[in-house]
Length: 211
Image 1 (cartoon, rainbow, N blue to C red):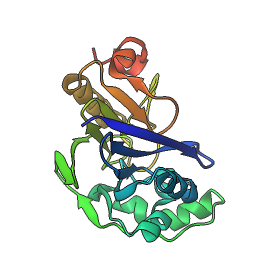
Image 2 (tube, rainbow, N blue to C red; image 1 turned 90 degrees about the vertical axis):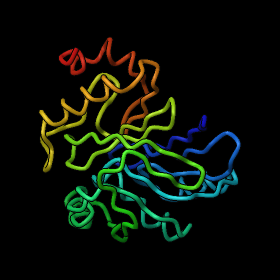
Image 3 (cartoon, rainbow, N blue to C red; image 1 turned 120 degrees about the horizontal axis):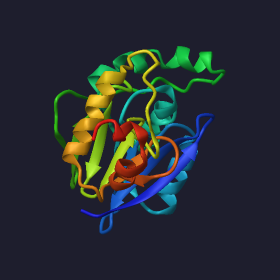
Image 4 (cartoon, rainbow, N blue to C red; image 1 turned 135 degrees about the horizontal axis):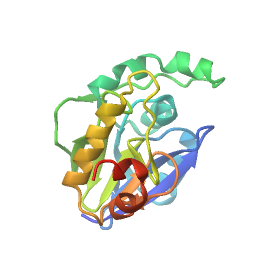
């Protein structure tokens, strides 16, 4: 299924969240809604979309701040890997640390474990486990588009110096992406511009180490 993508960049960390839907359906999914829940709600309602769920690549503060207000507005479930629980639990204290007013802590409806695919409505979404930036980090693939969270950026990779991060683990995850994904794969990251695997294989110094 080809998808249309609405990208919303918001908050002090300028995090990218996404609303995606098939070309021939109004049902949509939200990926990593990090801040300004009103922008997500406005975009969904202006485009006459019907949200099915929120799916997150990981649980860092800048990726989950908008989740509960959106859940409350649309009454939709929230999916995230079980190894991200520590970030959900520490969400309120993280907000205080960064001078942010916390929303309600996100309520998780579905903890992912070892799934390689999840089905939500008419969407069959490939789940690629990519720990390293966080212990339960994943990427979501919709045919030719992958939502990488903070695993892979244009020209860089996610930080591994934060709690739960591990450089060698992340490099192993990136090696898996190189092996499994076609060069033409579009990569939509949690920060910065989108890219392709081909571009990163040529220009990203971290991926160069793995080839």
